[in-house]
Length: 191
Image (cartoon, rainbow, N blue to C red; front, side, top):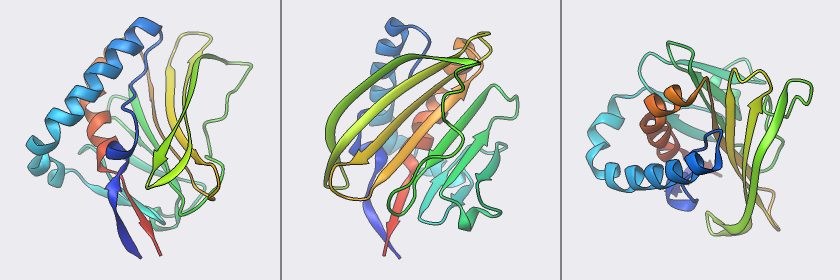
């Protein structure tokens, strides 16, 4: 496998969501500026984070967080994984298969959740045209919010998703920088 040179952070619009549209807009601006400003400064810190190597991707995640492969027994067989903070208030999500597929574990549970926001836009990822979709889902009992950014190629079998599930706005604020670093650390592999 050879490593692609681009990372998701360089390929897609920065996205951090919160329950309200106003908070989402300001969070996107903060996330984007932190990503661009922090990249050179965090190189040494990034090396200290554990690396999770999936079937066709690698991502770094915060020390002390629990990594869990989804729909596979081991990390090296997985196309998707979650990473949960020690206090359980934030969970990061990645789905990055070599080609196409459906992301496990993030479908809307209409009995318990409501889709609160959805936006789509055309763009490019790894030089391929496709559609970016940003989705925010909130628990009806207000116990958590989930936010995902996905890319699905127009003419190629490519589909990836990155996101987070957080307990409340305080958890989002506490872990926003970790999410940006996690998102920026994604490396995708090809044949």
